[in-house]
Image (cartoon, rainbow, N blue to C red; front, side):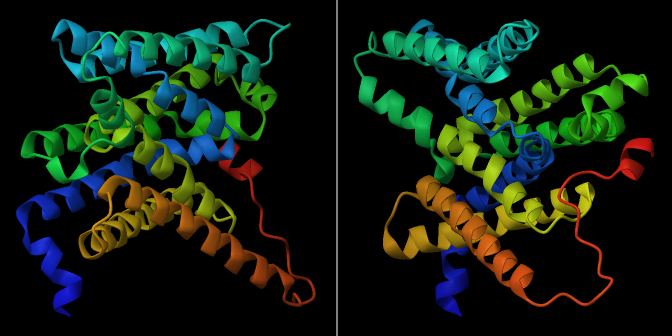
Length: 292
């Protein structure tokens, strides 16, 4: 059993594991809504749309997290504003802002003499360098994300099920959508400095998508996503230690592999002869959740 536990006897690996667990929990809360609403492209665009703020903060010697937050908020507000136009779809707005923000970030980063190093750190982070302050920051982000999810749960469910129903129930779908964008922004900004945008996006989408295939209730999806993300962090760090691979990328690949294994298992289960009178498992929120 030494091969299984010995890597985590090193303090920096143990902190990386705790960091990955906290990131997994934050991303499970935000990522479940991303998957239910088909907003994966938005999550990817926002994670890479932080580059201008990060690059500008690095050039000016400022706080990288603050720069990322400003850039991500700008991206979220821009997507929300452009999506209100009847002539522009949300995908169009996201695509335009994604390209514009990413290109601007690359231009700013190219002004730095350490272009390759800065861009690599932005994409992949350094999960093995997680410190105590990083863990505290992630814990605070998790607490905020949990509060936002609990307070906005009913509106988020209605928005995922039917925006028109949300409007009928007086749940202010536009405001709920903006708050949901804020939740996704919180997850990305709080985590990218620790694990990079690649791992953030992997944990934001892959674990919730793996659970969504089974169609449980939304809280179960969130809990399962957090467990899958945490397990992916453990396995990824273990493989990285023994194989000598990049820790962040290995965790991200493990999360994606977990999704495909879940998809394969779900496919096998669905092909089995179902008992008569068996009701299909819903893949989207039910009306009872909306009215709750």
